[in-house]
Length: 196
Image 1 (spheres, one colour):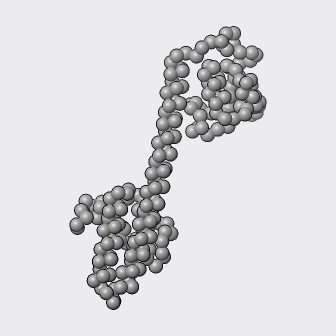
Image 2 (cartoon, helix red, strand yellow):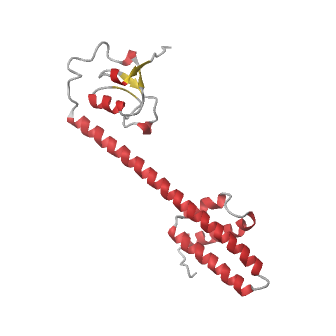
Image 3 (cartoon, rainbow, N blue to C red):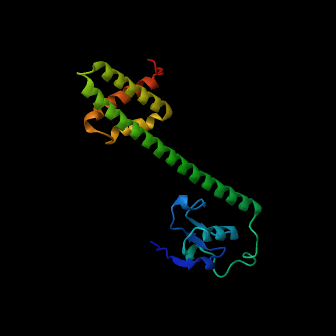
């Protein structure tokens, strides 16, 4: 079994023809693979912009000797440059979309947690009023359901379901509020309107 040997080189020592093996996740760079042979100055420039101090190389896979004649002075092919720039843009757009999605999910989850806590408090108030002021308890329960309905129309159902499995709010009120949320989600999935 052949053992592959590695060398580490500084960014200024990178050259066309070197075979590099990046110690980065695939989302941290625009290259198709973590291991490849450098074929253009543009690739070297991208490697220098990755924020690492040195790059691991595989001498046995690299071109021997100095850079190929004229390789350092050669300009990268226009299609290669365009493809690399497009890959850079796509990578940045994908990162931005993931950040925006994560922020929206966190915001949605926080809003659902607040509404869940409010509903648990309203449930407790309704239970305290049930025997002494049943009509007031009924109105409070209707307000709770209306609040949940309006919140669910603004939020994605995924967030509400996620709340059901997490320890949000008061333990005594969790079951009744969870059943209410599940019932509302089921009604929403069946296409029932808020009046139903």
